[in-house]
Image 1 (cartoon, rainbow over the protein chains, first blue to last red):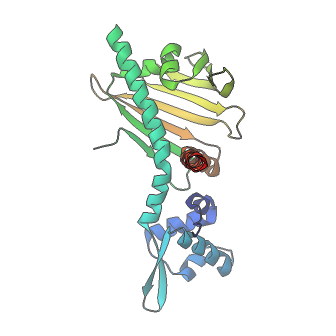
Image 2 (cartoon, helix red, strand yellow; image 1 turned 135 degrees about the vertical axis):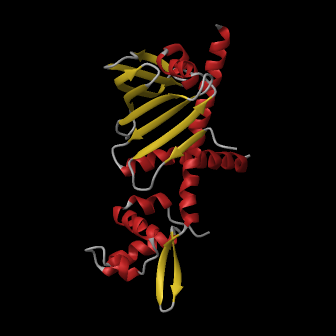
Length: 107
Length: 153
């Protein structure tokens, strides 16, 4: 089994977060992305690779150029990470509702 | 069906928004947060201290069946406006997680319904993501342990 990278690890890095934000607005070539940073092309390319491995970005070939775009399914995976957290709160609040309904009927 | 509890955690931000609609009148919802006995019941923790007022403080303890303290959480209440809002800090003692700031806004929807909007601000985005992941990781571990015990037998 291929061990996939942790999506949270991918978005924990500030440079990668900027890349996500940029690409979210429009598809961009690796060159265009790198031009926004002082870091070397290789460094940025490594960041793009990590984001692509996590399926947060996906490639699209347009003529001779490769464009990177945000993969909405990759972001959905982040939402799935959050689901157990949401459920924990949901259950806690259900309990609150139960307790208070009983409290109300006692009066 | 619309989910009653919503969690909004934007990428790269150090906050989480938790929104919940209750089938409870506003006053009753607020009461659940300021009366120790009620809070104890729904939170499932022992309330050691609860000064539900501006410049107050609180302390909760969760114990296991033998009475050992599993988790102690504390905080100060920065501000409290009845049936409207609570601003407080929250910290889990004996954990590496730093204190977080919580804004609780209580809103009336109608006579029988209310809404709680909770904004939790963490020390950093990395810490926020760690805390978000906790129930996820815990779930994985639980599944793993279950699998392990199944395989052992």
